Image (tube, rainbow, N blue to C red):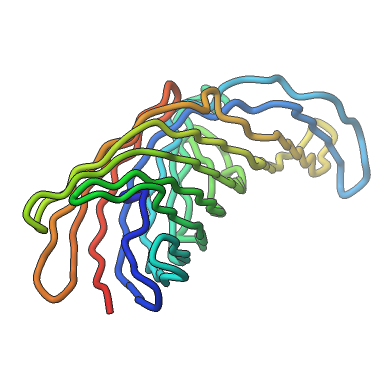
Length: 247
């Protein structure tokens, strides 16, 4: 997320790169399944609700920001993402690893109070990412095709304090909302020699929405800065780093 308060004055631009690695547990709910044989509907029903454990996500973003006023900035992120999990969907020693897929996001930062090196601000950001790949176990005849779509919303408030225009620390509470969908499709030959195709779909919901974050920002030469950050909720952990330059 970075510092929760605006870091740009009116008319200023910034650009840079973000990297993050996170793990989260995802509640899979309202599941349904359907089966067809040789393309003809055969059966359907409700799928079990359960928690997908330790879904790992790596993201790389290009980040662009603009100061609308001295206390308000908007930003946009665009980049790529990869995800993986293991032995959690069917608990059959399977592993999922996605290809590199699109991730986009954006938000706003607002400064409420500024006095000397102290700032109090707030942040709202949203992101969307898609993960397409294969779920495979060594003893399976063929892999499942899995698609995961995740939307995240984070709302944070908190203080930051800067010493000698060189080092800043920040942190505070935040709300983390996660939603989306997971689809799993696989095929096998049934006892009658036909091709049996099974399709499963669940809605995604994270277990916990409240957490805390803290970070450290170093101001470099030429209007550039580097920061590292850690986030924690009951169901998710994330580490991030970014390099930004103001113009």
